[in-house]
Length: 210
Image: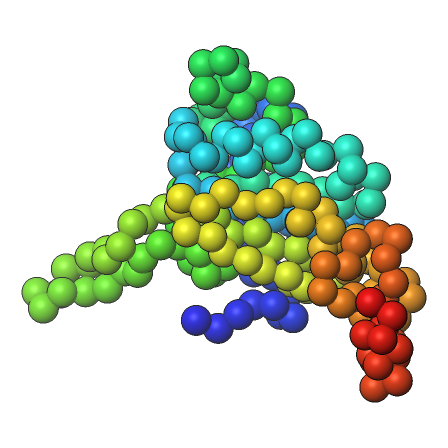
């Protein structure tokens, strides 16, 4: 599998639900080029178990992402109508009511394929019939995209493994820190901690003091 980190994020145009209540056509991340950082994440299915915990956790941290000039956008292979139904279902009934960031509908499965998170592959059998091997839904992929549309971080979890939203926020802080100060962020770096310059002397000094 070839990583898309340091490459241009795949472009797409698809249906989506915005503001938790409105279905739109031709939604694209291209609208944020030159303007916003993007946290783009995939989840397997609407009306499931681990997925709402992640989606709601992103909503809880949404103001922090937005304060750092970033937008959060979710995506699965469900339809816009299914997204909308789930968004209108109360939390007590397993829904994600109250989520306001966009959720993209990758019904053609091309977005998940291009980002490398579709849990299987299409192919042809000996009779020439199209088949799918695997599970035709997205794994838990998370992508941090800078303002130039370049993917700067990517992580993919298998279905049972929920992601850490706090770490996604930490990585956004780290990216912005490196862009601003030209330093690099060592292991477990977080806002307020020391960073390093890319030199042997800087690394030696950091290791000696930590």
